[in-house]
Image (cartoon, rainbow, N blue to C red; front, top):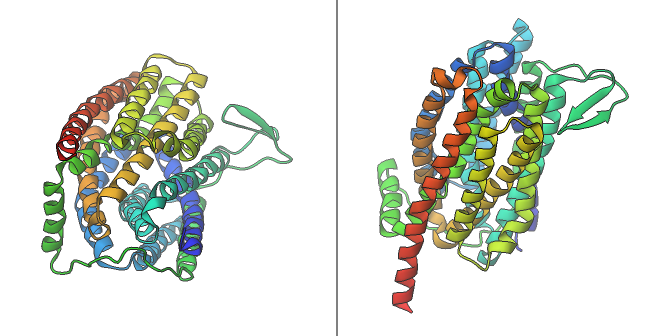
Length: 426
């Protein structure tokens, strides 16, 4: 694999910033559920932020295809780091962080995700040989999920602290030589901001030789967007695969930020420790997916692999909606980690193989925009008073299972049409 040093530094930067981002993004939903008791405010704000990313996502795709990806990383890290550092400083100065500034950090991070990850995958495709696409995507998944696992464990420690020189994570009791005091939200944000600037420093040392020379599409924003739409219109099987294989990710994001905190608090009646432990089990499952999924499914169609994983995870969601059991909850999160990460690996490898590098940013931005619309509708739906009453939050998982299964049918129809076309040409 060429450009090994560039890929290594890219991973190091991603680990450092992803660790602190992960803690912040777990701290914020719990902050509104437990600390200020404003779950509806958070859900409403999350829906608005998600909807706004529809427009940002389309524009971000044109930026990724137009400018050097390394430069995009540096500029976005500087902007995000500066904003979050300012919010943290206000918390230290005033003694607390205003609710709306907490939401600002959440929004900035979501907006960053919408350019960071498409840019990460486009950059990876640009500097990697085609035969190594599957390996690269597996490495990205493993790296990201090891980071998430560490973030989940540290979030549990930093948000809840410890008592009697003992800490419980993922259902396991760990003795400590001292007690840990819970961190304030401004401390979490300060650590988050610092890691952005560390990432900027690392990117300056990245040197690489592009594997594929991309034809940069210049012109107006509309012209560049039109080029991306035209490509997907001519390649409808790629469009259907890109959209419907993304639906599990859509529900998973809503589940993590809207359903999961309330599910732990109101249905399982557990603490922030169990909430953070769910991330540990999810990440462990995703790491297993990074190691095994591509090896298992590389001989088969990506379509069928995605279908199998989406049907499997629907059973995990059903179990969460009907059974109040903490170990079943952990197991379901493990399965979710395997399936969601597995789908992402198969999906990304398929798109890398079938979509040119000079179009990948815009294609992904269109998939992301459709995904944003679906997520916005789900967030508004799960913000209804019904889901905030008693343990009704559990029915969100039942609805999620149905949604994921329904997304499988267009994939199977598209796969059938693709097979017919291949058979006719051979």
